[in-house]
Length: 268
Image 1: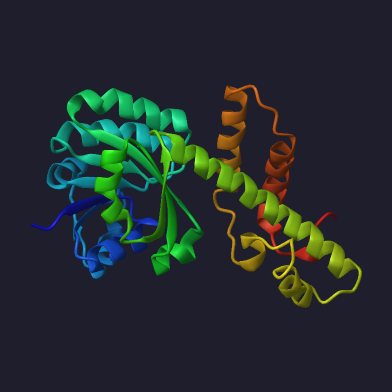
Image 2: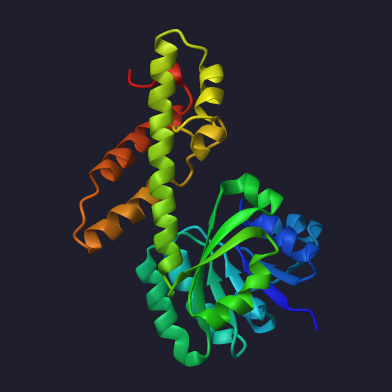
């Protein structure tokens, strides 16, 4: 019998994931608060669920791709009330690790396993099915979920206990945004001194300065930069850790976002 996978959230990341799941043979059931997304979901071979309860009761595993903490806190109890015994709920959203840990503990007694399965590499990788997934939770449910994740992720790393995938994603995001800021500063300096910026960028990709943000230069929307760095700041405060560069990166990202890649305006 085909495994049924529920997906909550058909946004920029959720929609391509839905398509990959359906193409890989999973019976895919989708819910989103925006009913206008139904046509796009059905075009990708998935079925539309009218409500969360209907999705939860029919699914062996549920992938949660919502954007904000408040949505997640409201959603998981609703899923738990209707979920099948032994079902897995995997949080793909980027949130504070404590939130996932609290949700996992709160619903373990109901036979619901909550894992976190954060995604890296961005929208293009989601389209191509080449995401990197960090997964946090006990080994047995992680292995049960692995074939589902493999439908849209080319690399899957079990990072440890539940919540650990959020820690790994926070570390990833800290480095990502620091690199994007450094790339802007390096290329703005080079342009100011008359260098061919694109020629230099290609050369830097062959040097010790190479980084993914530089390779994908011009494509990053920075949609979640401030949210990502806010989570990093909260996590650092939780353990009494000072991350001086991360604090500066967050401030720069706020001003950079509306004029990213406009090197003539950087630092002026």
